[in-house]
Image (cartoon, rainbow, N blue to C red):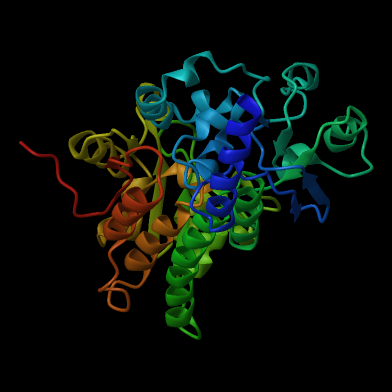
Length: 378
């Protein structure tokens, strides 16, 4: 009797399967990509247990997956330390983040625990360019993971953002099975980037000084080549620190700044500067708090003497735009400040709103930039 019923069921189901009317679990398809280090990275299917060696790379992952925490086996603790405002939003929406194992700070190879990462049995470890290091250097993390039989991919949004953001998103999208989402963000990003580039070709470039972590430390830390310098260049400005500083960041004295007297002054800040009396910008920061800290900064000795401040061409920008694909919003803000007439129609807030609606796993509310017209509400 059972055998007869089985034969009948088979005769009924087989035609439906052939017509695609009954869904069957799709077999995971192998994934092969080329990462930023030029390495071929292969997985039997999309990654499900990822170790983010640098926790801050959640910034990119959270634009591609609606629940990026569900993909993580562990991560670097640098995200919570450096980006507490974003961390709070992830914790509110994805409480599992609070019990996610950490693998060290993730800022440097010395701060990263290779042993802890291996113990979590990940199917993929994601490294930044700085953590990956030289392929043949001592203590190279890529070689060590490969020797342990663990797949590694290198992506980066920090050192050369305009060069590496698109390929990094493409690599991540393929590795987690979110290729369509990655391509959608890439199209969104490239359309806005090309609009900026087409309008600044051949124009005069005003001098710009970017004061990093402004008000919280001795004046004046500034980006040299790469990172924010790329943003300034795409926005149609000339970063005065790029010709002075040999690396990605460095220190410029107040005397050097006053002598250069840039046409545009841009300070960067974050919630990490609240206790230091510096510029406070970021997710969850109110307009009043941002305006108050900005007013204090530009009234400080030395900074207040800059002609950019006197001429109303002083601005503030969230420091953490420097390591996320959200940076296209920062570049649009810079373009409006550097060339207000040429970019009068540009709306960075609308760009940010669209990213939040279409891509971001967390709310992106707060005060992420501020201009010279900001005033403290009574």
